[in-house]
Length: 282
Image 1: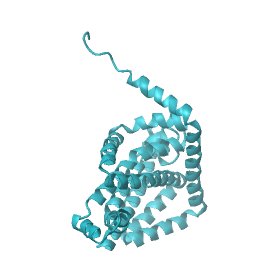
Image 2: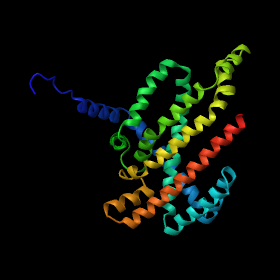
Image 3: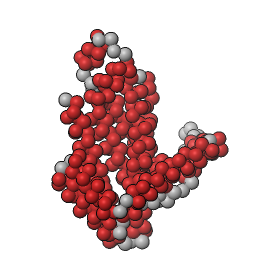
Image 4: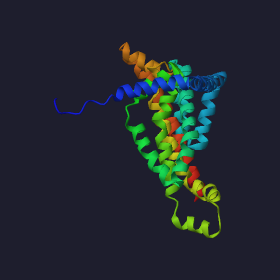
């Protein structure tokens, strides 16, 4: 329409930025790609070295210790079903992808959350970035991930990290901010430094909230496995995606059920770890 402002070449700017980053930091991206791939393959190889029935028993015992006998029984029967259906190797690949994405989210997210909780300017910068990360469609993350890391498990992990990291950062900030002001004043009265106050008072009291953020990050990373399969990430998501493209309802249901079992197991374990930490801090 006449009189309207010309369209901003935003797409061209983004393409230019991606090309520039690829050319400038190509070596760094290759190093990250090799490191992430090595870590994921290491987890798969380590878990795959253990016989499936022994790993099922160990994970069930962990669920019993952290949760209760009901979750332990669910864990035993659910993992046994996954093995029986023939998705054990795919389950291990999915678990490795999720654990890697969550570990990266924790390593980056918790320090950023601590920094943002201590510095108002940082928080004001981080908050809109987190809003963008959470509202941007997950498929969009795959485009730059493919450019920077080609196809395979690495772009799937990176996209999962971007999608899953915001809850860890947000709830780390929230947990530290929720520490009662009178406790902060008491530590200041006793002459505690900022580091002492953070490590001995704020972080221990904020740990249940931080664990809730990690729990949410695990769930979001797990929700990305099917989307990540579109760029070559292995695991249960690949089976679901193949079933959708080939209209195999039964296969899709089986693989989807395996994802649900892993999701429930990881959710209950991390929730109960958070509750135990909360009980220990009271």
